[in-house]
Image (cartoon, rainbow, N blue to C red):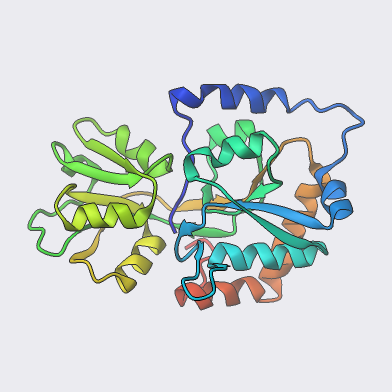
Length: 267
């Protein structure tokens, strides 16, 4: 949805170093699988403000969304209960590095820099980056380079922020939550927004703002579940649970519920 991908900014340079120092765990350290089983819960971090992936339902006040359903499904297959932990996106990977939770299920993109610091599950959802523009927009932005001299809104700490800042001449503005980005776009404070194609489709479906889908401007992205390195048993069990969910159709059912198509398979 969106997708949501942490980028290591200069102010967070210490995070990578901290995570890398934890790679060589002592032989006596318990595998995360044993810890989770003994506790009886899987601590899952998510942003909680990123519909339709993870957000608070206005009627019930409970967390809902694709990521929430996936977390509950995987916890059940691991034989434990799920315990959700809310975190702002900009600090969510730092919290994982500090062992505040076991995993993040919140549209975290798999990329080489992150894989230096954390292990990842197999991908559980795929999408593409997409522009969103105002309905009355006359310019045809086909690539990020077409936005040179323009203001582009992105999610704070997302892979889209990283992609946007790599394009010369684009004025990048970062936002803590997607609805704020859409509001500024509608009112002309920015010229376009960049987000996940699935997230974009959902926002456009429910929004009454005068905005519309723009061009898809990147490659297919893989989203996975990060956790601390040095936990091979947990990784095997998590990937087995994902494989079982794919084989028995339960992962597909969650996809159809939220998107009307199976987003758990690569396009």
